[in-house]
Image 1 (cartoon, rainbow, N blue to C red):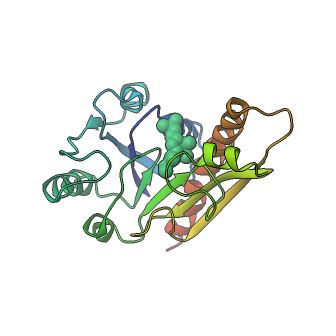
Image 2 (cartoon, protein in one colour; image 1 turned 90 degrees about the vertical axis):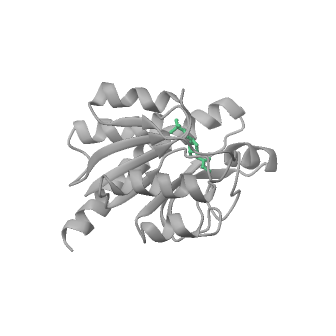
Length: 194
Ligand code: GAR
């Protein structure tokens, strides 16, 4: 199963995926490319570290979505790697119909809350401010509604009295780093079973 990773930031989840692949924990999946919409995103450095093609792709004039031209450009660059799965690992841009239809049932997203609670931006802060006692992370298929596609897997994280927003962030990221590679490994096994 060929994977293209899209990310906008730190890339700690992309790193967790690449590490899992290197250590033989990614099932029958292989990362074939990493793309970012931010030229200086740390995620792009993972390419040289893990010997994978990694590139900034111009996202066009908008901040949180693609214009038609950039959408076509991105689709063609991703298609060139013939992916079986496109993983959004901290990709902070909303994908619209043509993008999703170009990779049907092949795009998954990681979100830092237990969806359907706290979709959109700052899932961790939203949960913290709401005062919930359990939050977590979700891996789901991407559809045209924000953070609303079919849920594949979730991991719960307890918020203890001693937690701070920082310690909660750390716990959620740790949960994400184990959940996302596990989901990909599981999907790759199902994929290879046809
Ligand atoms: C992760 O916590 C991920 O759940 C979140 O961005 C972070 C990326 O971290 N994604 C979203 O909020 C998407 N709506 P990373 O760049 O270190 O992997």
